[in-house]
Length: 563
Ligand code: C2E
Ligand code: CA
Ligand code: CA
Image (tube, rainbow, N blue to C red):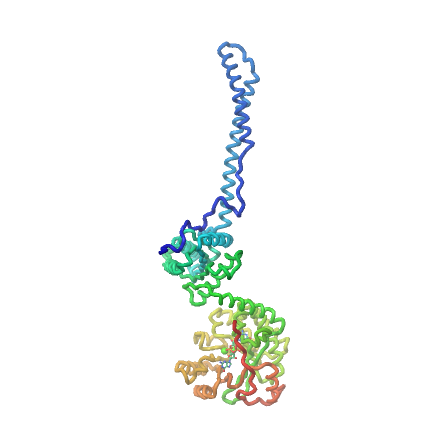
């Protein structure tokens, strides 16, 4: 029975093999000139020395004048030459030694991480490629692991960079101590590491055992100057086993990418764990980058359009306005819901551009409606961080010649936790222009009563989750009742979202006066359908406010795209 499925041999962290530098063999440097001078001087010395010495001894013993005085001078010169040559040889040998040392240091710095001594991002790929090649010659495979510390930034910010460095150093050391010999380990930057070990494909369970040991080691508290830090990490694993799924030349890059995808999955699934790479992750990524490209190209092509959902005064049944909801008329996937593309647009930094294009279209659409009808638009937390947001919005209003008091900005409760100071300034400046502000999805984000009091909201919207569960869940009943009395106390009107049935509407009415919206009054529809509806009710451009209709003429709901 094989007992050591993971291979042994010295671990390669930061040690550089002196014989290989970027594939170039080093040339030995010798001082041939110095050496030549010495040899010539020695020969001369031997040839001259005996003659001069005999002549010198004879002159001393007999008192006669030396027969060859020039030869004595030559001998002295010869000695000087010998000393000079020797000196030059020693100097040059030392210089060559120093240069080689400097080159080795430069090489080490270029290939290793100075803090941990691990390989760096640049050098892991060639090392990994070589490792995979070597492993295969003995029928073994390689597992590549990506690791990212979960709470490193917090520890770094709270306890300083010295503590952060210690965490990185300790983590690298602990893993290095556990990894079998002939493994490699690299710090890729920040708190991201990669390591790889050779294993026996008949004993994959050895990898699980290795990961269990590494997890335990990483989770052990780290003490820095009296402060105890609890660190966890997320890992992604990929192996070289399925050779048909990548080209021979791209093994290292492919495996690291796969391990990275798996690590991202580990983060998404709650951190402090490891995930194996699965093919679906690569497919998802492909779909995601397709969506990204689609959004980028779709904005200038006008593929993003506003849809409108009715907002009703539940006491009178009158239409009070519409909430604009973004839709993507994707040429490939059909009509897509904002749940699919808003978050991606935020992540790729296109949300402002997308939102501005939608608001621009919506202002033009709504300008023709009855002036009593309001237009609500959703604003992403990222847009609220933009110091120019208020100016951009006012510019759009001026361009469309749209009265600010008919515009209602919906911001979600979660925005309030991000930067309350900035949000307060922004809300105040928007309100000074006459724009109204609603707090959206209320009940999901734990706002405090104090926040509600100090921020000048015009209305609160109860999240549709609680509304749709009215009469079915005791908790939802309690929350809706509490929000209703909060609204009365703060003198804030309340809108209930997600009214789907007459039963829910009846339940809701028990708790007071509300405005409402939901599928009971129809699916969100495009600008033309809204125009047709308003024209029927004499609300285009001016006329009596129409009675709320229940679902009729409803367009198909948007599809959720699937990978
Ligand atoms: P939201 O602000 O809560 O918008 C209401 C969502 O509830 C809409 O989904 C609407 O179609 C859906 N809805 C309305 N009535 C009902 C109902 O009776 N039952 C159920 N189950 N759902 C109902 P939609 O259009 O998919 O929008 C989802 C979210 O995307 C919105 O939630 C909003 O947060 C965001 N969003 C939409 N348009 C934009 C936009 O232009 N910019 C930003 N930043 N976010 C947007
Ligand atoms: Ca909303
Ligand atoms: Ca909402």
